[in-house]
Length: 155
Image 1 (cartoon, one colour):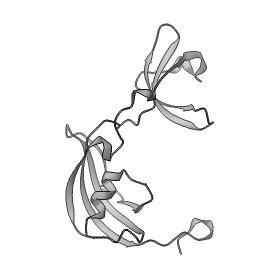
Image 2 (tube, helix red, strand yellow):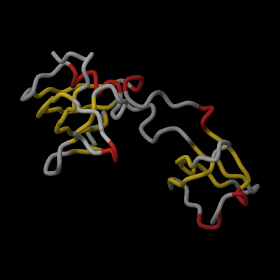
Image 3 (tube, one colour):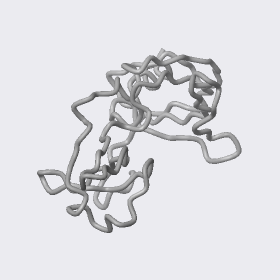
Image 4 (tube, one colour):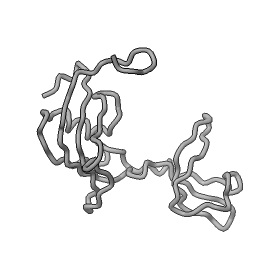
């Protein structure tokens, strides 16, 4: 088992699927995923599962929503006047668009409904919020992490 007090760079192949079996992402046939343990680069349950693995090991894990993207939160559904949205004539239900939040940052939202009264409902939940996720994992390597030096390059 890895010593989590030291950071490691982890390289893993995975296939992720929903509970109905639909595959949402895979690294098979592509470059494997590399991330730094403890940097919140992957969902918590994925990181916890890989943390207990040794290089060369394979395993399957099921993540509950709380271990992945969280439960769906109703307070992340917003209704706003359609005319306040750039290119509002082109809105399509189900489409993902970026909207500016109160702090001036862009956030991804899904168009839920364009109302006849000139209002549009947006969902700011992660698209996988509320979903159980399944992963087939293969840990390829775990190496000591080297802090980036000037310019972000690794030493």
